[in-house]
Length: 197
Ligand code: SF4
Image (cartoon, rainbow, N blue to C red):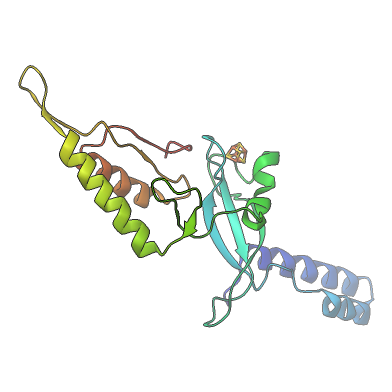
């Protein structure tokens, strides 16, 4: 039987109530009680671990989205709470973290890449292919023009000081490691994210 932590608590709680009532001679009442237990609202939700996006404390969070990721079903985030198994926050969140659902639902939240051409006053929606090609092209141009292979003393330094990278704290440890290696391999010195992970 595949039983989540929450499901286990619910099941054992109901079982305890039923057995207690049975011991007191209220067997049928206990059965009725068990039948009346409503499914927990997150029972059918998909649970995703992540990191709070706000500050360098980097609290662990659990994001619950509706649906079972079936094809053609658009899942939506319905609840976010502290991750009790996370070593940093042990399930707690400050008021900002506790309000993370507001970020997800904010009408002004950026969900697609946007581009404002030089001299233009308006941002326009572009595809991810366009955005990534544009970023790659500009990075290459800047690196070719400003890469420093050796310092004044002739020591090899391989530095690229003119472009920096702000990565996301909401990445797994492994993703953060690979991202860091990639940035350093390019010679990039300025690299950070708000959670310092
Ligand atoms: S929950 Fe609060 S303390 Fe924790 S990372 Fe988010 S903003 Fe920082």
